[in-house]
Length: 269
Image 1 (tube, helix red, strand yellow):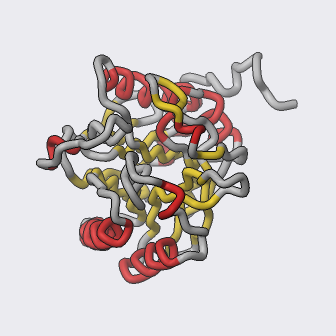
Image 2 (cartoon, one colour):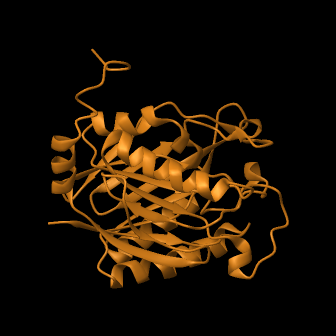
């Protein structure tokens, strides 16, 4: 059976408690739509432009504990971006994945040191490829700037994943929406996986004025098939995208376009 998932395109603010209330409301909407998983954007805990050190918490802290309760109450898996303390005094840009039968986390590997922004000043990079299983479907985790690095998504596929989740808080600017759309479709094709990309909504489309030059989102979340075609897409404003991931389609595409099997560079012995 296809896996029904939801992508919740929201605009988070600087207050983690208020954002948890938003996550609870949207998780309930996803459950009512029959989703088995709801993915929230990067920085769901607190938007970029917030001082991250004071709000960062460990994975057993109050914020993550409440996120677990939200998932438990709704009976589905929640994936949400948060910030955890790093040993060197910085924080880690972390995805928490939690819910019935699932408990894992991913630390963003590729940091956004581009377009005049230096994420690495305050954020320490992760190093581990992370996947988890839900209803027999293996799912890989990636975050925002990771989308510019095809090898991570191929690593998901090599680990058996047929779906990659990509929470993001994409930076605005000339050509950035076009890059988002191109890169997400390309990564689905590179690895012949479903790609579920969920971004922060554009603050302006939420009726908010961005008081920072930090990447606060442009919207345009999408569910992309393993053939690179967009199956569902949102506009700039807040919304809930619900779609189905058919694992058999991955098998069919990989049989037709065997890019993973035909690789000659970067293949693990």
